[in-house]
Structure formats: C-alpha cells, structure tokens
Image (cartoon, rainbow, N blue to C red; front, side):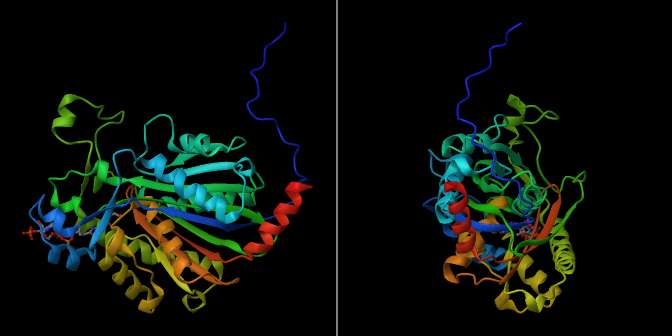
Length: 362
Ligand code: UT7
C-alpha cells in the first residue's frame, strides 16, 4: 500500500555533527514597548485614584498600552526579530520557539506557533508557557534544559503580554498596575563555562484564588453572564499576594545563588520581576543587597507580567553593556502562584557568534 507523504515545507538540513555542549548562554536580546503611554493622571479620570496613591503604593508613574492592531504575538514578533538580529542568527537556525505569556492571542493556536510562523523559524518546534509573571525564569529553565540535554542548540524565548486587555477598568485595585510589552532572548549552546549556572523554581497552586482570571476556560466557559460580570478580567487580593511575593522572591533568590555556588557580592545586578517598587525594596532589604544593585524600571512600564524581566534586562544591557563573566540574578513571583530565580554568567557572545557562523557555513 502506498502512502502519500505531505510535501515538506522546508528542506531538512543535514544534521550538524553531534557534540555535547552543556552550557546555555544568552546571545541575543530585544524588546518592544507600545508607543501609547497611560499616565496616573489618565487613570484618575477612569477610577477613584490619584497620582500620589499610585506612586507611593506602587512606584508606578506610567505604563504602555498596546494599540488597536497590536496583540501579544505582534509585539512578540518585533522583540524576537530584534533578539535574532542582535544574535546574528537566521530564523531557520532556531530549534525551538517558546512564548511565555498569560495573555495569549487565542486559546488555540498557541502564541509561540503564531510567532514561529511569522518570523520564519521553519525548522523549529513551538509552544507556550503559562507561569504568569515568572514566565521568563520558567522559560530560561526550559530553554537551558533543552540545550543542556542536547535536544536543541538555539532556543528563541519570547515573553509578551497584553495585560491591559484583561484588566477591569472599573477596578482601581488592579487597573493601575498593569502594562503591555514584549522582550525576547536567544539562548544558545556553548562550550564556554558560562550562561545559566542555576535555576530554582517554585509553585503553590492558587486554590485560594488570590490572583485569577476566572472565566473563559473549561471550568467557567464564556457566556453572556460571565461577560456581564467581567469575569474574563483579572482579580487580585493584592495585599496577600504582596507578602507572598516578598517571602518567596527572597527565598528563591537565595536558593538559586546557593545552587550556583555564588554569594550576593559576586552578582553585578539583580533583575527582578517589576510588580511594585515596595516589593522590590522589601526583597532587596531582606536579601541585604545594596539598593543600586536592584534594577528598577516599574516606574515607566508598570507590571508587564512575563515580559517584565526581559524588558528590564534589555534596558539594563543598553545602559550598561555586560562584560564577559558578569553574574546576573533574575528573580520573579506571579500568578499560579509561581516563583523562581536563575543565575547567569555572561558569555563571550562574539566568540559564540563567530564559531556558529563558521559551523553553519561549513
Ligand atoms: O506580578 C505579581 C503579582 N502581583 C503583585 O505582586 C502585586 C502585589 N500587590 C501589590 O502590589 C499591592 O498590594 C497593591 C498595590 C495592589 C495594593 O497596595 P496595598 O498597600 O496592599 O493596599 P491595599 O490593597 O491594602 O489597600 C489599601 C487601601 C484600600 O482602602 P481602605 O480599605 O483602606 O479604605 C483600598 O481600597 O487603598 C485603597 N486602594 C486605592 N486607593 C486609591 C486600592 N487601590 C487604590 C487606588 N487608588 N488605585
């Protein structure tokens, strides 16, 4: 019996020689923020709030809001192209596309699949990760494991959120906090003893519903009633989440440092999830970290969920280019409830790019 095989869309490339390269380093990074700025004064027109409350309780002055034609995938595509360009990597040489998001374009298909198609990563598998605001750290954990286990050489990790589409603009407890944006990194195999040195992940299933979007899934399917109740938007018991965030970000950062065999003095910058300046200050104090080592940009972007660490990392690197051997500690807490941290040792990126160019052109 003869079987008709589907036409291959992209010719299979001959396999590169197998060689165990156990380290996974960031070789490209890029970000995108929508141009529309929403200030605290703008929000005071919508709900009973004011600039002073928002600044003193959250540290946020303004946030970005996606435009009418923008979505999680369109922002993710721009950030991903910038990361690939920075890494001088062709889309067809990516093995896996990951998208960490809580606000996918659709329930199906996954946003990573849309990004994979639009960028032209024709040889790559693709899947989404939902670890809410911890998405970047979870994504780094998955990307580095694919690389360290030998299943992938180059992973494109995109983090993108359109949280303002899931906000109840009548709820002052939440609508002042969130913003939109995207960041992406290329994580790549290298024989250098650099890249992801350690990862610590944690979770406590949110059965108490501290931070939820209740409707639109299989438990509470969409209906006229759920729409009327705004049950497709975020609800949060902020004060409880706040305390858990400080406790768990501190503990998970210490765990990742211990696993890497490093001390805080060895770290040149901590790049945390940007939820609230008070959470960052409390965590910094609990860690006994000098304030100048904690990178903060929540004032200009608000809480951008899974995208916040990659946006912050991109901004940090633009201001202070990393040197080979610099150590970074990334730490996050978010819905789920999830948390995690990882320690990175900055690689000699130019050497990785050069070695790759020689290998791929051979
Ligand atoms: O990304 C990870 C997940 N999210 C987070 O990590 C966020 C964690 N939580 C927080 O950042 C903070 O809890 C909030 C910023 C959300 C709230 O700050 P808070 O200091 O915990 O305030 P609260 O919820 O205890 O509320 C204090 C008061 C309340 O009024 P009463 O009951 O004392 O009269 C609120 O109704 O502040 C009131 N309030 C506001 N007032 C003016 C709440 N939101 C606002 C607002 N403007 N936007």
